[in-house]
Image (tube, rainbow over all chains, first blue to last red; front, side, top):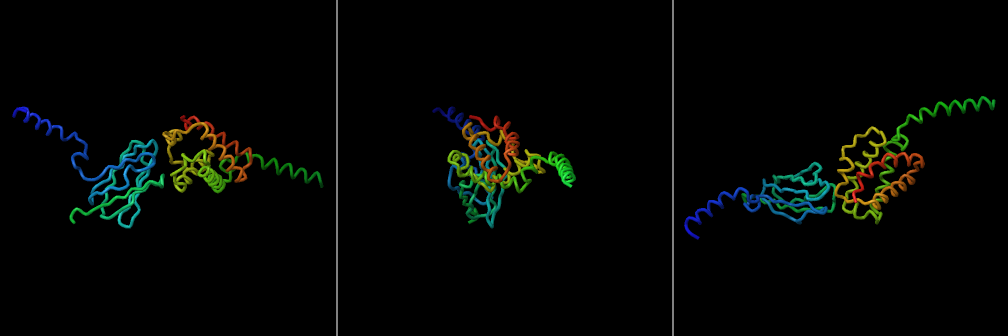
Length: 115
Length: 139
């Protein structure tokens, strides 16, 4: 590759960076799919203050919640295709469940970045 | 004396008919306690009916029950406000076929029998629900 072509390639890479998926850019947090009345992973690990993005890929509603002494969250009914972000403000290990589908369980480990 | 008794009986019957006729289906089904009984019976059947296993497996009965009661209350002219989604939206993606819909109706009839609902009232409720078939059966 000539020096001119290399420069062009570097510029192209810089220009393309903003359109890469967030995960590929190393953006903190995690994305979890809701599919077939289940979460697509059993657990995720994030930093305190980061969010888990729940993406409803089912054709019916979900309604996630966290019920713990350190952190509580209740979503509205989440329509098909809708993504919601849940920001975990406390460190610890939390179980995310679905009010509608009781077999759905996700373990979220939230670590304190300062430690 | 017997004529007097007959007249009293006739008047009592005549006077009671308009009051009965003015009752909503909600009241005729026993209002909230009666509908709750029907729904409880129906859900017990739905959750154990092998024909409906795929529909009710991994569904939270405690989440569903109050919504089902509110829905029946609403369609029978009761004082409840149904906040759930319309039938078409609520059942979209569940791919319910005619056989499973029929199973739900059969179980509901059994549930109403168990609750002691007279046949005529059962038919009145089923008549209210029947038009929703086209929104629920998608396969």
